[in-house]
Image 1 (cartoon, rainbow, N blue to C red):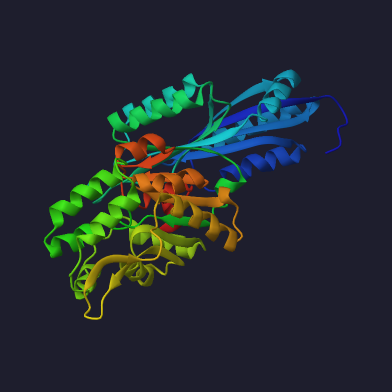
Image 2 (image 1 turned 90 degrees about the vertical axis):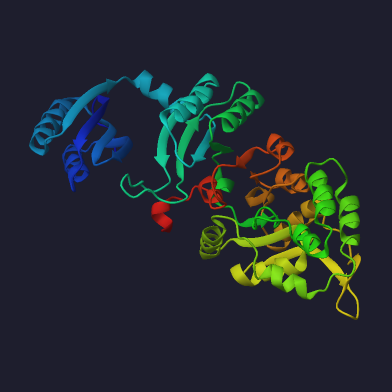
Length: 408
């Protein structure tokens, strides 16, 4: 718009019961006087509208605009207020827009005021300003509570953390004490364009360790579980522990593997997560320290693009030999595979996601653009920047910015 006379900025704020056409009515009046829209935002909570518009207009027309908007507000039964913005105030506001933007996502079975207060206190102490707040999960019924309920709120923040490590530690402490999980991400183009997601399998996609299931049927369950637990806690080298555990399976009939595969306990939310990821075009990989037999079973179930795991050696009688074939898929191998698949798919590493629970998942979690510890061991949670411990695997969708209303 070409400026002719003296201009001024005005913010108009409208609140009240929402109705179709309200925003159009406001814009019609502003358009009549050739107003330039500098900013606009609207929120609707339980049919209660909050609309804000900042516009620039000729000083000689500002009185007419406010008068007509006031009449229109009375006609529509809403409240309206006006505030002048000086040129200096406006320029200061523009300059603040150059600050970094971040997204804080908090999730849980339920989110109460005490949890939101605690999270927002942490970010306020770090000097962030909240630009907007979105609820990503659907509305909850009071009369018919939903099984496996989940709640998620996303905060758009502007600013720079005074102490990023201290903030991360504070949020982590809240996660432990207040039954909620969080993700803190820079709001950049990579966050909006994730393309590849890599999952651990055992205790992530499925709620068991396949090697433990095999061991129970071989009569060595307690021995193998003890070694598994030590490995997942990072107390012993994964390759060493894997070799020891596989040796204990010697003589087990391979038919047992089929029976286990057909009865794998799928993690809550996994089916929903995979359906959405496939629908949205994500490339999906299983990078597992478990076994290819079970990974390939899940591959058929969900249409997984890549499966890398360990191959058990089988003798001519259909029995496990107690050895494995090829290299062990350990933590470093998972990191290498994530990089390799990203290269093959021509995906920037910042567009990748990794999800896992064990110490051997830490290398790929740290390598990926978004590493998520899922119902993980304490050491993994302590070293991961994002974690999910309160809800199912579909909580990953909220960290990616998906909204229930777009999915269900």
